Length: 335
Image (cartoon, rainbow, N blue to C red; front, side, top):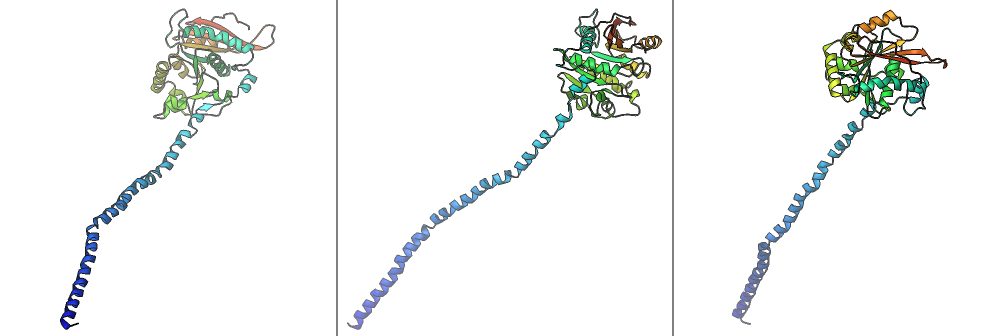
């Protein structure tokens, strides 16, 4: 082969060699041109990355779950139980207090008789219409005649009626005894409503296991407790009770009339008053003086406590009923 032929052959080789990179460069160029596809292929990871917040959001919400778990704690806190009290009914029955579902008893029958005229007045079936007939005050001339014992019996007996709910208020703030007689510890009550700003009646009312009976205790002792009964705050409270609880019978265990003047002020708001008189002990002069202090009340009923029943040899209750000064000796009814 001549030199020229070798040169031509070499040139062809060079051309082929130079053509080969071009052929290879085209696929590379194609791949480069197709590089958007890999970029698009890289987009899904970006979309996958964008989806991560969707996964992360539940993780952000997850810490709120403990907060939601905390929320039921106040709801499940023993607030209602703190305002609900369980009265030992067997104990009450053993000390001579009326209880629901108890066998028929002498004292139960007597309080059925005692409550009837009071209920008739509340229902508007009495001799005349009476303002605030549902506000009933139980009092006595002097301490120790059995007014608190009678208040509890009357309140429970009335609560056993089908159509009435009863609120028993311990208004003997200087010597409260309602909770003690019921076997319950001291609780906030009337004094706290009168002295603590923002405290409402509903905050201190106690529901009991006796259906339709609630309690308002005397509350925290106060050095001026008796004066508070004659205060404007007490007047406002009584007006609220008369209006807000007009469908409820409200029984006040009040202070004795001849011990403080505040009980006489309380009496001016009452529709009906029950005077407890201890048989063979309360002096007639004291009784007349006590009744003269509540002349503004239209209805006064006298309850004779610890009266002997002829032939029975036991103690019980008698009752008298009258208007104005009336405390006449109505015949006792034995059950």
